[in-house]
Amino acid sequence: MALEIERRFLVGGDQWRRLVLRQTAIRQGYLATGEAGLTLRVRLALPPAGATVAFLTLKLPAPGPAAAALPAGQPLTRQEYEYVIPAADGEALLAQCEHRLSKTRFVLDLPGGDWVVDVFAEANAPLVVAEVELERADQVLAIPAWCSREITDRRDLSNAAMAHRPLEVWTAAEREALLP
Image (tube, rainbow, N blue to C red):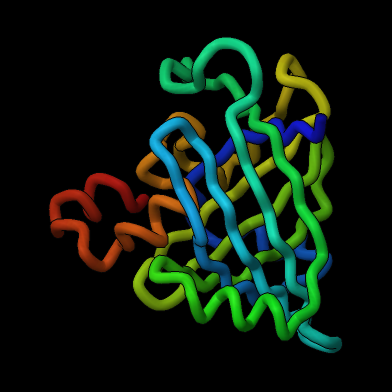
């Protein structure tokens, strides 16, 4: 079983930019989402120099206690199955998705896990989120100062949720309470 173990943070400022190794423009859509945490996503990654790569990704809750009661500072653990598919198939599937989002993903040179920063575009701008994938759920993590607030436990800030209910439809009070 493939497990994804991650923590997520809102990003304040741009100090993270000095750590960027590479960036990729991403368009993604959701073919299926479920209350129990199931998502079926299609993603098109467009590196600055190179051909579009498409992925089909299935995410499911990990066996064990439900993630609904995720305590602060506890990583989200899910089953994740990701497959490369032909780019034309990815484009065709994305066209079928009612719920989509766009972002630029920056891969960082930072110890402690696989760090990325996602700068959301269009309906979810100006949201900026850092994610770190960990090897173990109990892994100790040094959190950079530019991570302003942990949002691992915020289901409303998952990519799937942001595709369904983008930031632009949030009330002004909701946006002000969220953004650093």
